[in-house]
Structure formats: structure tokens, C-alpha cells
Image: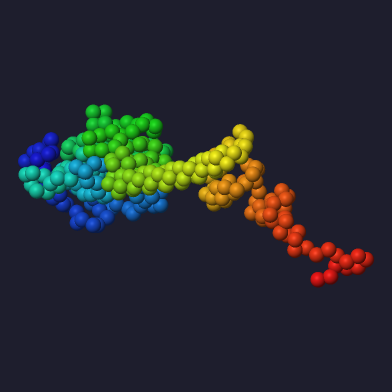
Length: 307
């Protein structure tokens, strides 16, 4: 018998001293063999969901199990849907310790039987027993003092020393994916994988920020180089042009502006696109226009231009 049982008595068997063969669909209630029916989809889905939630919310000092048989008396051997018990073995027997929490998934017809099992578990020493009523979407806790179920606030949490993170009742009673509640619990428990991923994400974000900062700094430097070149050459730069140069972040465009700033006579020439930039000399009467004009041949009078 487990030394952690507060009702320790020489007549009580060990909690793992079986009356029924494990891995079979039976329990022993009041000395009678009871067949435990397989689950229908609503019960089975809620059972799976509850297992995931409990596993995520328990701390490292506790384990959880589904359909774990517990010997509650000389004539009872019952298996709650989910149990939470200390991970460390019993210091006296070397076996497992008695569960601290037990959860049953019930329908309207099985709530009475769940109450009978809850009373047996409580007498054996299980601290808290809960029932999840699927049909009515509610959670209940067994009151040993009142000998009855007590409904819990659906917006509240189940807080207990066996749970590292309080269990949200809404996640337990509503037929929805448990992913969000599980993720929040794992983050609250500082799960190593999630913590590492979050740290890696932050590091990548910082690296991206540094890269963006370096690119921003290079762009600002090139823009200032354009302004310095124009100023040094005595080219007038009005406020709007200066603002446009400093606001530019395209590295290639700034590179072209630096080249043009070394030879242009007006700041507006910086912004002429590449196809038109070569024609600026023609408009200003520069060397390009003279050279081009010198290659032209006048057309003969009264006829077509000959080649």
C-alpha cells in the first residue's frame, strides 16, 4: 500500500494490486465486474482533448495517464479517464503514488456512476475528482463533505499544486481544438523547444534589423555624398530637391546620382532617366550637340537627302 494514502489502513490493498486484468475493458465496482463500454465520438474526442490539456498543464514533478486502474478498496478497482499523480515512485513500496487529481468524462446517464466512483476515489485519498459533462458543457468537482457534485465557473481555472499552469475550464468543456490552450501552457512552463524557437526568432529579427540598419546607413551616406558633390561644385540645391535626395533609399539610383552630381550643371539633371540623360547636352548646346551636328549633311536643294 502506498505510504502517501491518508487513509492508510492494514485492510486496504496497494493501489496497483489488481482485481481485474489490465488492458481489458473492465472495472470492479462493489465487488462486481463492470464492462466499460468503448467511447462514442463525442466522448472519445473529449477524452483525447483532455489528455492533451492535462499533459500540457502538469509540472515536471507529476505524470498523467489515461484509464489508469486504481484499487480504491478491497472490492473496487476503477479507472478514471485521466489521472495526475506524482512522477516519483513511492518511497516505501517503490510503486507509483496515489493520484492527486482524477477526471471523468460523463453524460447525463453516467453522472451518478461517476459520483459513486468519485466518492470511492476520495475515500482512498485522491484529493480532487472532476467530471466533464459533455452534453451540458460544464465541469463539476466532487465535494466529499456534501457527497455531491459542485459545478465550476466556466470562465474560471482549475488551480492546483499538481498543475504548473492553471487549467482553463473553458478549454475543457468546449468541443474545440485544444491547440491554443496547450500552446499557452507550454509557453508559461517555458518549454525548452518553444523557448529556443522564440529566442531564435528574436535573434533572426535582430539580425534582420541590423541588416536593414546597415542598408539604411549606406543609403543615407550615398545621399549625403550627392549633396556634398553638388554643393562643392556650386550647384544650387533647393529645399525640395535636398529632401528628395535624402529620402531616396534605392542604392542603384543613388549611385547614378553620384555620377551625375560630378558633372551636372543643375540639380534637376540628377532625376532625368537613363534614356534621356544622354540628350541633356543637346538641349544645353554642349559637346554632344556640336559633334552630332558636325556629322549631319545638308539635304540637296529640291530633292531627297542623299546618303
